[in-house]
Length: 402
Image (cartoon, rainbow, N blue to C red; front, top):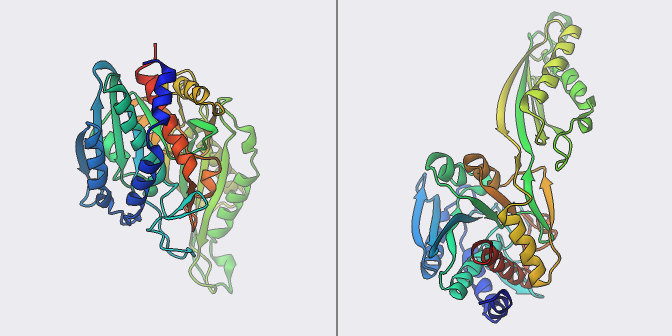
């Protein structure tokens, strides 16, 4: 059928009913991470994907930490496109909710519950999109659709995407991540992240005679002040990205007020663009360390890397981006703007493992302000729109592409 007929038939399907029902079921499972218990969602997601004709596999690095992977093969050869959501959610402890966060409340055209925006609602919308795509095409498409319900996204993905792609060797050609960004924007690049811990060693002595000790806090504070004064805004790379940003995240030292502290440490984080390397940042750090040592001859620093990931920049002219732009135009909604972000998603881990094209977005603008918040909500019509968008996006990738 032609594209116009495809969209007309799509919009006649009971999208709202199916998306809302599936969201309610998934959000009813308490999969707060830690501990996760993502296995609670496995039967529902597996049954849904089986109904779409998917071959199902469940991978768990530890008991209860299920990753559900469904693969639907088209009738023609082509690329494998992954759609990746996650089934874990953040805790509700200490938050003031107006209702049970694990029972969806409907009010004013919105769904309220933990996970409705991050990420069970958007993932439910994309699952329904896959179902409708298979219904409308009869499976006559090129390539494969890989649907992943991942574990552990909220705590670093060591039991989820990193496990699947780095340890088990899963692969794909493109990844659609309905978990982040906004509907009017598409994330195709993510900054690199470097987190380090700098420890400072000294010599303790009674605080009444500090001159006989070597205060570990003082040179560390000097180092931090020097790093903070550097012109990080002037450290730039690829024009698609922002400049380098630094944050002094933690500082601690000493054990009691009556003693010269013989140890102290600080944790520092940088977000950096493509074109800047870890070495560039560390050279700045080491230069300032040398300057501090010229002031305090006893200064003794040690650096430990806490986390590191390189920047990711997907192709702005790849099949995912061009199909997404075309789909928005055909549905009569604003064409989303390409952007890069300082944060990172599971898309970066997949890109680093496979080199696949990555595209990240969400069902509504200002989604980020609702994530992890009490009384988390999502507009029902935005989920419906998002589901339609994903269905047409898949069609443009796998049926109507040239």
